[in-house]
Length: 319
Image (tube, rainbow, N blue to C red; front, side):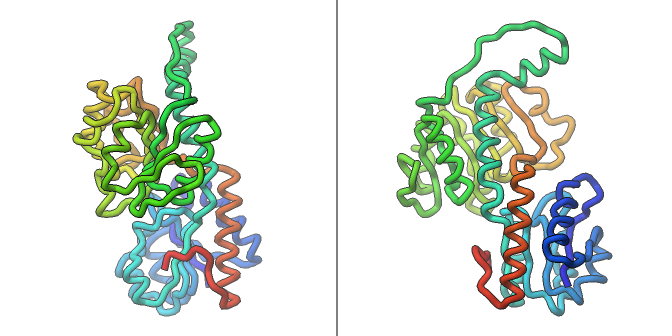
């Protein structure tokens, strides 16, 4: 039996479509658990769980739920991020974990490129002027051509960002835990050279998982090293940046701007100063979803379920 663990009626209708599409491909119903109480009743008979992995709509696989999982063998996350799953506990239980890796690369890469262009061309200001019927001309910012983009996290999505940025004639460098030469990247550095990378970068993209090592990877010290024209684009997790230090850097124009899709607290509180900054573009954690990624993610999850049921190796499994 397949069980889903996320509330699909609060706001995230995108996930409802994914479940519907997956049901249609499989030709079977998925038991939808919208509350922890639903999950406690359903999980004793479930051998497969599908989840969002993280976010306000996901039902956490906490100790209470794990204790009733008598038949669980496979956990699949539509999203790429699995850091909020109890991976150690699931490994001890002999449960295989997979995700939707590969579904979101192009969509997130286009978000990053689009965010840089939007900030450069001051689209956020022009949208505001349009709403106010104000004909205000303003000189645009830099072109992307010839600028250096640093991608912190050169996994599957980071590599797609690098590929698209290189085709915009940008100089691409990367930072990763275990550096190695990569196509489209002029240089890939280890985390010990993060400061070197920041000093030479015009655009800094965060697209790595949240771990003890990446928590507040960018803080006051790192912002002080950046160019005054530097732009931050965060499509990873909010806690990879010290948000207060970033707000200070943006207010004092230590850096030029930011394109932010993730935050310490989501939804972003209404009193956050980020909302009103003219050098910041705020989006509500939507860099990944698109109609393309929806179809891709469903196909990836479907393939993993079929392979599991055929006793075949699950591709790109986490554990």
